[in-house]
Image 1 (cartoon, one colour):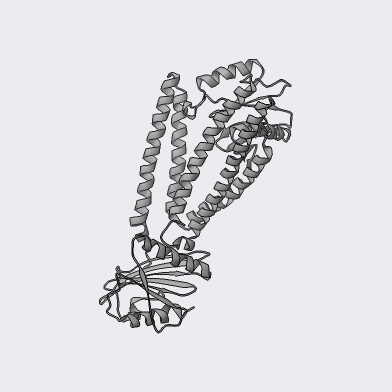
Image 2 (cartoon, helix red, strand yellow):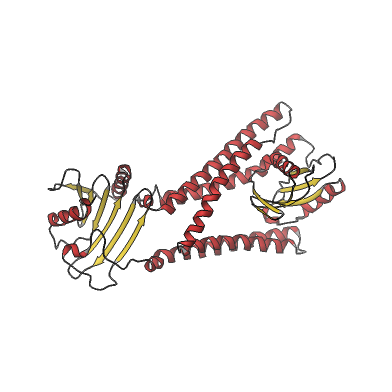
Length: 436
């Protein structure tokens, strides 16, 4: 993205890929862009006259995220580099970036190849393990919300499908990084045994990962904009909360780095601040989620009764206008309707899952059967006068029925048997399955 004389570029890399960053920065300088700062995965450039600029990216394993900016170790090394003609540009945790417009040699932090390899390996390993932990948490959350849930309702939610796609792309991205890290580690150790220099140039891998990130970024931005425009305030709240978390952590750590406290005290303050902010954020996040679950949906209730199957179909009417509750989702693969209404004579409660894809309905049915089997509940297939393609199952404990066709599945709950089973099945068949 370019605004006037400033350009922002997405560039994700690990410490062992630092040579790829140096090459990229030098190529950008030839195009008239000089690095100004690094914030997370974003490189910020300012416009300059195209020129040859030599960059040096140094990895300082002993510098921690919790040291904040301008740690004592980093400042000491910068003075050393400045004397040698290298200008400090910016830092990102363990990574220090310098440049020079003169033809001078880089100043190695480590004089021995094995020492350098071990330092960069440890610095990279910390990022890799953090990424693996992040992937595990994300995958677990997605698994519980989708494949690991007791039904296939996520197929009726475009938001969940879209999120699953984004997470899948993120997993592919991080898997490429992890595999490449293992390959680099093995090759590096082999080079050390042969007393050869270790290679740190992985520009091609960086290009592949950047393409994946760009593919993720554009639809993510479109999702945020579309959800906000559709009035999905919850998504906007979560987005703002995440931005506030990042801003709070950065503000506290920048403030601490400017104090005159000793190195160890700064680190302790930063660690405590980080933990407190994360705990508060988790509490607030859970509060938002539970408030959305228990009260947010009430604001979106649909106060009408013109759905495929209603109390009127059973010659009944609601006891009052507030007794109806409907939750409806329509996705590109399926649709789901939950209906509840309390009548003067009976209660009608059902969940209807529909899809033009037979596999989706079969998948939903199998998930429901497997989930109840885990709690030792069985569904018994009933013989009916309905067409052969309509299967009817009853919960062995009674009052819950499943009616299934190739493209529809309806679960009827809490039936109080004011109607006979045959009357119930025939009415549902007439209103739900005959209207294909």
